[in-house]
Image 1 (tube, rainbow, N blue to C red):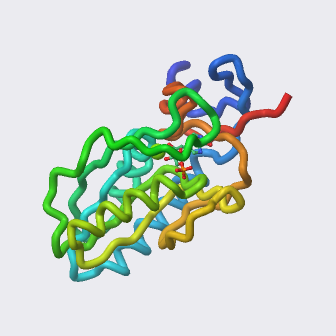
Image 2: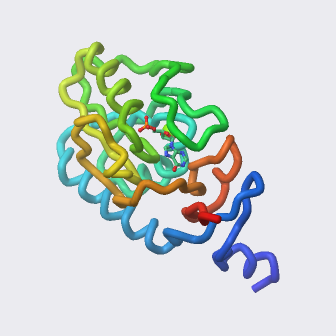
Image 3: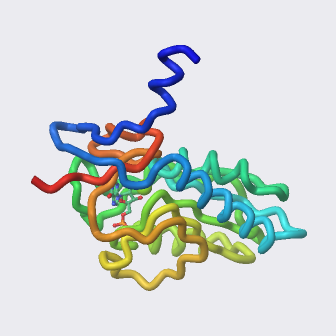
Length: 191
Ligand code: IMP
Ligand code: MG
């Protein structure tokens, strides 16, 4: 194995992002195992139907691409782009719609795919908007859920990991747009 391959395979215990320190929190193996379980659960639940996965951009695209490849039934994919964070670490609660879904969702089985549910305001907004298109069903799949921070009562059908109210990056999640390319999930180290 070349040196580059070795470097790629080893997890970095600590990384810094925008001058803050983060440490490894959920490693590649744990993510892969859990995502596979979620994909198999979805495949069983939707057997005989063709669900459409709606990825909420930007954060969900890494999770969505892995999740999709563990789903063993036919499915479609489309994206919705929201922005609520800017470069802050705390959710502003204000949701801006930057790109709407192109597919016709009337009569469809929709699975909204999120990277993380924090206050729950973004997912509540998206689910509300999707309802307006008259789908047959809507469910939500999220990789992470900050249970204690969630103010909304939107039901979450597929949850990868329940985590405390701490700031995380990697595997699609960013800090001011950086950190999305980290292959594993890192948590901010308090000073
Ligand atoms: P909510 O509307 O407060 O639930 O925020 C959801 C969105 O905030 C997620 O889709 C992420 O884009 C972002 N977010 C929430 N917590 C974190 C975090 O710990 N790291 C990075 N992004 C986060
Ligand atoms: Mg997001």
